[in-house]
Length: 295
Image (cartoon, rainbow, N blue to C red):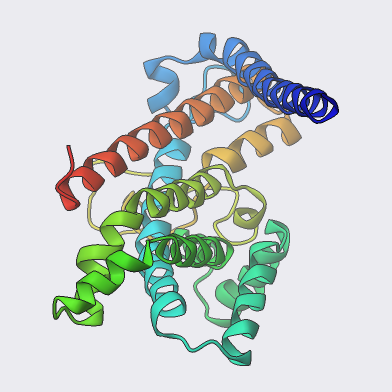
């Protein structure tokens, strides 16, 4: 009886903690969305911000955030997958690999402001890339790469050993076994890791203050030549992202409707992250069914 009572009590505590976390998340999201959704309009999403008068939007900042996300993931995902595959399937278990894993863990716990200062000193100044989208993407790659490496390695190690051995027994090479047997099975976990990394990119502000900048040139959305300074596709131009814009609007408070702009931009940021997460999870399930011939 005592064991059953303890089991019921601990089950109740765990369930209560779970509901508490859900309630806190719902309250946070509900407060931000209710406060900001009313300020969202097509004009707000597409127009440029105004610094000294009301009525500005977040169009360039929203585009910069999405463009930075694409640039960062183009760099991070291949490197993270390659490093994770190497650490899981090719690296020998010795002191060197243990030290590499320790470094990965340390990097994953670095504060984003420290990564931003590193990006400013090394990427912006030493390599001469200046305040630009590319500098921000490289800094966020340093920030997110340990997460991608760790999740990829853990996802591959979670694949049942029998399935890996069955592929090798059929005459498949190690690389073919990884790509045709192990990666499809571990794809949902890898997609989840990619989602986590992408969410950190889209919502990051501290590291981008020192690498991407706090202002953007006046963009010409009819100019798609990436070599032009005012082209939105130029990765070497300064770019104020949506998260940085929210911080800047709240800190400066020059616009008369600064509070409304910050609330609307925060709601857009949350909605975009939610839509991206849901879409990425749906895509992961579809790819998993196709690659594993599942239903």
